[in-house]
Length: 271
Image (cartoon, rainbow, N blue to C red; front, side, top):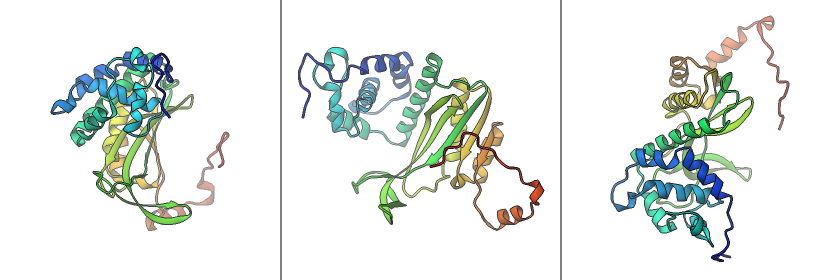
């Protein structure tokens, strides 16, 4: 099915969203930060904006980005690119150029936080939550993929996929927003690259108005000296789950009953 009536648009809600993105500095940030080689890198701001608009409208593949050209969309937006052009543009990105795009995303988030109450209460308390994930892919020729161990349908299987890191910002009053991402190649251990990403995220959080206390959350996969050191160097609190090894078990056994402190969860969500 296609939406091809030239006088109608199916995603009119993109107008205020993309206007807000422009006001938050998306176009300027990409123009200033991203510099790709060859003609495929021409006008990166327009191509990134088209990709963002397509994703907001529900696109989850390069072909789906054609939704930005359906019906009367061209009467609402300029510099809308075809999926084939966007595909060539996206395939040009190597690690160094991805880092440029990440810097542009960071600038845009800071600009957005200055315009809307994105992190209400950040002047008191801000949480940074770090996690890794495995995203399955099916093409064998994709760059940077590896085999990861996970469960699908109740069975332990080896899946070919990507191993990204995600860091979010939130407060007791505000829902999480993505502050940083890091795509690692191959079979990446969960903590690989985490220390530097936490450092970047703390800087981003403070630029977004997190003037109060900052707490970094992470599970046992990130229980590493470099991760803890990154938090301490930047004077933030952290809550990192430890793995149960011999030293940890011995330390726990040495704690007397009256030394344990109960943690209260008055609004706990039990799944």
